[in-house]
Length: 270
Image (tube, rainbow, N blue to C red):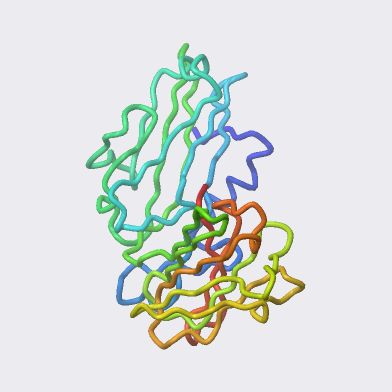
């Protein structure tokens, strides 16, 4: 039988079923082959499906990739999560299938489907889990629809430096960048005395200064434009006081491909 999901699970369930067509804001469709990777492909937020297994027993089926698998990863893992060990003991069996058949490899144990990313051929797949409660009650099933792609996903990493500033590395995954825009999760960028925000490191060891003129939207946006042709990655150093607290997950990046119709939003998973 299909999973009996909690009423509050409806938005998450819809995300899982529509993962191939309903993209996060700023996202882009995921082409299956490297030859089609002209657009920036941003990682997607994780999906968790609440599933009612039996009266008083609910679990979550987790897809940490939001329906998009990058085949350049070493391993890919989907899992069942329990509120407590006692709840886990109330499940007799968990069975995983991929596209209606047993996976060729599964190294994750009962509650996890763990396999090399290359087990998923480029294209669309259905990951299904069947959960059997203890005591002989009816089993329930949950389904995740995913796409495997050979495209490199865009990325953003952030870390505080010893001087109270913030170091960022931004990469498009392949397409050339015309501009990036950094936005804080809340509040505004600060402006140190003298108006120097930091530096931008480009390919070939070139460095560009960042000044307060790059700020817009009342200090809620920092735009780095006019990037050299063929730029696919850059490093940004923001001085102390530019980002409040210097938290490693303080910023999101909006990446615009050269000639691209719309920017792609990239965040760091924390």
